[in-house]
Image (cartoon, rainbow, N blue to C red):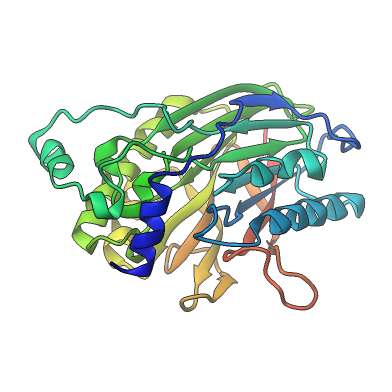
Length: 330
């Protein structure tokens, strides 16, 4: 058995506490109430996988919160943070520790997805592998969280179907989280949607199986976005899309969400090797990991900034945070 399979097997018999689905944070020092003006959003995969898959993540989460608070103290912090892999208590507390007033969390571990209704979906489930974590109920929640300086008006969430997960990804109940935020000076809320799609090589299963799950996740995401957005509301879609260098994923995601569709890619993080990540000079799906996209009366401003790399070059996650400012149009 491979090392990653052994670690995944350990996860099958371990678990972590469930988050509260929505809460108003009460840190020692809150950010000042957000004023009218441009909105800056950070999308960040905080690498919150539990031990023994990773180590040192509690300290890293504290450092991430400290960096966010320091940015706010300098007047340069994001008003909204969309997080992926916030599995542990330390990651869920990033918003509180950084000073955000509001937080919402994605699907819990026991939130059901849509049942299989077609023969191919049932066949996919029948072929599930115990050794790749596909036969067990999820042991982790979605890992999704949104931290905000703006009040949360409503929250919507959905778990991906079990026929839309492949390999070790099935150990977490991945899905989609949407929040509507009350931004000063606007009648219509800002809608922020956060997601994390199935990995490819890291899933431990072959590409056709992981791509089947990926396609169904994208289909679920597309329908969910259509169900929560309105023409009058500005929308930001953010998350870890795990496109990478796979042309099938690029093509399917482009057709479903971008291109002729209404979404426009505003910023992205790209893979430049196994552990190499960069902010794409031009926002693109090519080799993309994190993507930030928009729809409706909203326009990107300035340049994309990276987040999570310290002065000495140390990265606080295996990803780079993607930060972009937006003007909300009338």
